[in-house]
Image 1 (cartoon, rainbow, N blue to C red):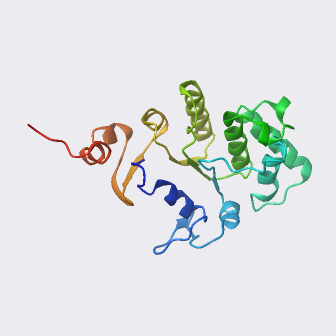
Image 2 (cartoon, rainbow, N blue to C red; image 1 turned 90 degrees about the horizontal axis):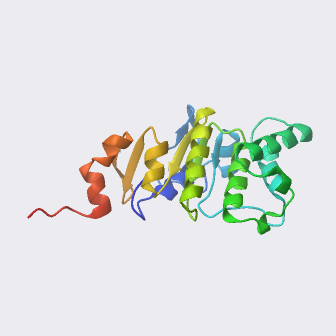
Image 3 (cartoon, rainbow, N blue to C red; image 1 turned 180 degrees about the vertical axis):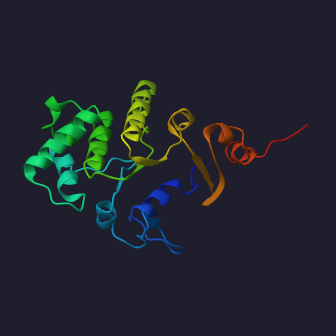
Length: 210
């Protein structure tokens, strides 16, 4: 978490290979993945969703998720296996299967986000990067997103997420890292972060005492 411009989305883009780092290295699961392309990073077990949903608008929801199932991991998979995986993940994220053949250009924002998430999960990730999944959602939809994130975590997938909505952050996080101007200023549990003076000042400005 962190204020606008803190570098949160940039961090996810560097980890996933969308951006190349200017210095340093990225190690995942004991392997240096610095400078690998996004498709190679994905095949190693890192999947990402975007704040602004990226999709193939002319393809159906089923076909969009099928792309992840067929090409997003390193193992070979038959079309039958991929088809079953698509339906399993669409159902897991709560997307109605009776709309699986709808072109995604005709879907609403909630349905689009669920398709994007199902596509990421279809790659069988070890690490799932979520970039502001509640953007554009109303309070009820945000609550549904919280439940879904918790469900993914319980399935054994590690989640690294960027989020602005404090209620979401506090409800789903085991550990929180706070960025400000591209630097880490705090790390701890939700309870610890909520009382951290550096975090409070970065969001609200320095306190003035009378």
